Image (cartoon, rainbow, N blue to C red; front, side, top):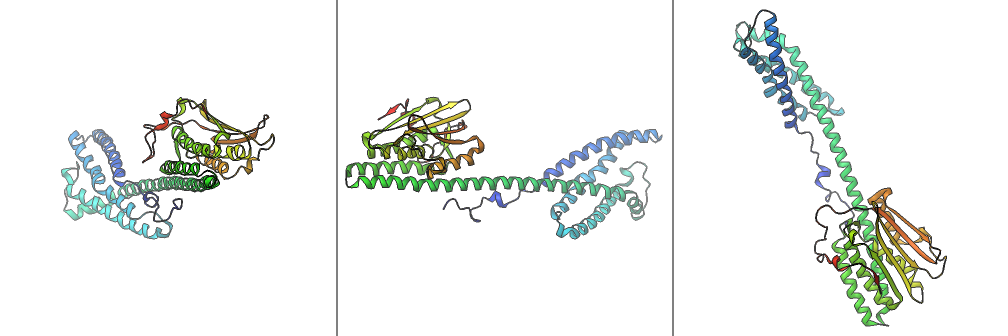
Length: 401
């Protein structure tokens, strides 16, 4: 069954997490470091000026580019790499803590080593000492700031990772819901098709002995209808013009069965033929009308179908004659076809899709459907393998006899 979604058939997007884009996070932090570098350059220049130890703008720029450049180009990607390698989880908290404790030590040592190597060539006023004494001096002066910066970057990294995971979960939940809705719609379609096929074959069987020619014609028409419906079975919605084609094929079959006992009045405005409607919507409506009306009458039975646009709503009305006034079935007993439609309307449109049925005073029965008026964006949706748009063959769609 197509409606069954197995683990092997699950979309890759449902099982693969995108995760945070760490390169993008790094680029964002580089932008932040550039801002800090510009501000630091201005503040350092002014601070040295106030202390009566003025430096040139070139020296101020060189000092801050070195200070912030070490973090932007070397140390920040190391911290983010650790965040990606050791995600925060309750079961692995001790492991994450140990990894970052070691990383803080390593990052601080790298920062101090680079600054010691650059020395007075970059940092104004720095005294020249042998490497290790100078390293020791820098270590105790820079360690606190390095630890704070490290923790800030790690915090940013984990916040980004958290919200990225949350976004992945929301997307996966939405995709799973979409897959489940599609599966449910497919189940409803598969329920509807055997029901329709059984009823049509029953009609063919009733003509095999009494009118073999008519039975043969009905079988050919049934084959055309099945090919057309199967071509669009994977689409939850199709244009109204396509749905009317299916209905015309179905009516051709029923006219062979009932001959002059069936009168169908089909009224549709040409300007709504591109409206999107649920697949196999009209056929079960008309089938229900024929089953509870024409098929139970000994004489002429009439079915009126009207489809119109009412503001932002597409209104569909199917009215049929009954055996006698008051003989209408209750809504809960209308059978598989209408219950199927009601379920699909709820799935596709929620509270915006409605199906109502009521007995009219003139001894007729009406089923009405209301759904949002929507049209396909871009080119019309034509199922692959289907005939080229013959909806133009349905002009005003007036009385069919």
